[in-house]
Length: 454
Image (cartoon, one colour):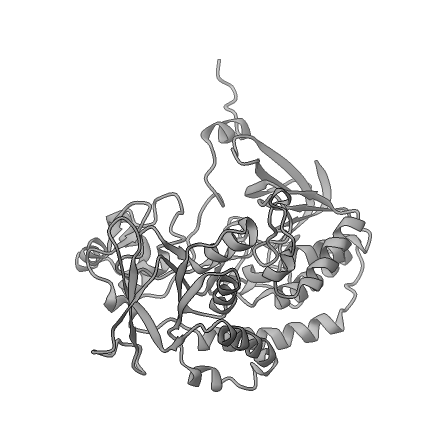
């Protein structure tokens, strides 16, 4: 299969990029792992569920309708249920390798002159005692269950951690009939107040969420954190406590909240696996791009959360800019400026940077992890094992990984990398993975068959 531009990821950034490039006469193929376009932000329930009002679960539904209708009317080729595991350079551009369907045992290739990475981000969850109990889910996971499956994660929930995602998760669960015992946010109002100018555009949205929390009588505990989750066979409750200005638990402030669900999240991290395998430069943990959203690898663009966590509106602006730029470069013309998108991107990046600072996890969270707390769930490595590796001289994620196997499991460190670096006292570093997802050996054998053997 051949195309001019392969856009990987059908969330807000990928949709905006595909539509912008296609509108300028470029052949575009949009590839995504989900069964429907929209990404996590615009995740849709399956048609068979018969959702009467899916818009009730979404923010900015009209924007989604414009994207959906625009895609249906465009010449963009859409490949859903295609799980991209690698992108490699070829003599005439790039080969995008994807595994097909839920079984993911067969691989197909899309050959493109250029590639646009809109791979999004994934949740960051910091461990705490009891976080592996059934009933403890990520905040994004609870939201995905509600949006995609019309399933509430439980009957009485606590939503905890830090970051803007907690607000739509708490209000969404409450609107679905779940009793939300509390929204537990580790950041305090003063942090947000320090960035008042940069966040001025977010005030109406924040006020809307506040009104919904009040309407559903959801208690909000700011500058609090979950200390422990309780239960034997499954979650029965959590202990929360107040934090002092340094991010340490204030003695004597613990309280128990009965619940059967804990939706926990501590922000998001960019998905950079494909960009790294192509040799794209990173800026911290995100893909580095120029003003046109180009990476430093010729023929590769990136947009959305992969270039820095900033939300759907920023992803749309970046995707639009990237799609226009890719189309122009492929056609050998100068990029057509998009003043409105450029202005929006500048403003939204400023807001994103302010939110990132305001919602930073508590500085001393590693001190609350007991030695018997599992840090790497895939390999069942405990915090005690990590600390033992540190005592043996390990000082970074890679050395801890070699000594304990933390990060060697199915998720390849996506879930535990931040926790290991926090316990080691070092900054998180991108993990260089040859493939973006697990690949059957049979697929690899067919990709590179041995030659010259008799």
